Structure formats: C-alpha cells, structure tokens
Image (tube, rainbow, N blue to C red):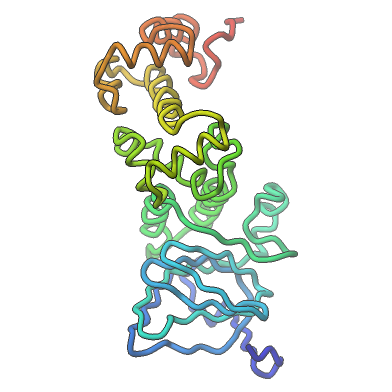
Length: 297
C-alpha cells in the first residue's frame, strides 16, 4: 500500500451525501471485477461488515482478509481500502457517521467505545443474534429521515453487543470461538438442540467441543448446555406465565424428572417454588430484576 500523502484521498462528510446524521450504503463486487478503490481517510467514522464472500482490507500499512460476517470499526484517521478477493463475489454493508458530535458517548463508555483514538481499529465476527439486530437497525437508519436519537441509540446498542463479556460468567476460561456463540445458543430455538447444535454453531464436532469444555471448565459440554438452559428457564419463570412443562420442552428437556433434578441442582428449589417465591417477594410494583431473596422494605 502506497501511503504517500499524494496517493491518499480524504473523504469529506459532504462527499458521502448523507441523509441527515447517518449514511447507510451497500457495495457488491462481482467476481469479474474487484472494484479497486484509492486508499483514503475520512472526516467521519464507519462501521462495516461483510455479508457475503471475503474482502481484502488494506489498513494502516498492512493487509488482512475479512470473512463473511466479519466487521471493522473504522476511525477518521485510519488509512484503508476494501476490495473483493479475485474471482469471488463480495457484498459489504457500511454505516457512516460523524464522530465529533458523539464525543460524549466516547467519554461515557471509555474502553468499551468501538472507535478509540489510539491503538488498532476494533473488529471481530458478528454472531447470529447481532446480525438479526443489525438488520432491524438498518431499516431505521436507512429511512428517509433518520434522527440523531436513532443514530445514538444504534451506537449504544452496538457498543453493548460488541463490548460485553459475551456469554457472561458461563464463558469463563473458554476460547473465543466458543464463548462468542453462547449468546446465540441461549436462544430457545437453538438450545433445544443441545450439544450437537452448540457444536454446529462453533463449527466443531461434539467430541472436540466436549474435550475443550472439560479442559477449560472441568465439566462436560452437556453440563454447560444445561446451565444455559436453567438460566433461561429461571428467567422465564420470573417474567412469563408459561407452564413448567412447556418451558422444559422448549429448552430441549422433555424428560420432566431429569429437568426437575437439573433445576434443583442449579437453584436449590423446584421450579414451582422458585416462581412462587418470586411472586411473593416481588409483586408487580417491584423491579423485575430484583434478586428473589431481596427483602421488601
């Protein structure tokens, strides 16, 4: 990459032809055309991800490949260009916005902020859950008149999704390729599939998954899966009116005796007693997230 100043284009915010405070764009490179662009910096920031194919990303003097569902947070001072690999279709989505008016968010969220002024640009892989939320946000941000409120709400939500300790305490000591999919697996549409479904999300075999969980957490992959199931059931007993039988079936535990044993081992009580205690300790005028053992004042 030639980083001579004469070969670097500085893109202005006006050149983006933004609609209000944000611009949403899509780029599709066909296999017959790589779509060469000149290296550039910006007067704005970008959040970009690859929806299809693999992109070649030249940034700040080095080259990397961004696979499908990979994302990058580009700052104004980053010098970069994106193009498709030879003989491959590639589709990218890009959200552009000015960082200056958002300085308060950067100060508020500190190390979690996705566009730090120093160090390497942030990037990683989008989980299925995050991709679903991004699709919903695109409909809002690509509207004819997006509001500043919409942009800031999106950035706060995005920061939360990409900066939290994915998987919570249950991900302790696990490698990123496993920890990063636990939030996706916690969806009942997936957790009902048990260890085979978790292994599929990880792109590993169930046997390999089990070896890793044993080595990292001294328990079986089945135990990890059941811990995630019990967390979901405990929350549903709190906020929903679904029957215990329906919740057991929804999370993939049709054997009620086994389900009751797992719940009692996790919480020291039965599902019915758990729900009853919650209703007694927290009537409707109490915060939903208050611990069930908290005493009413």
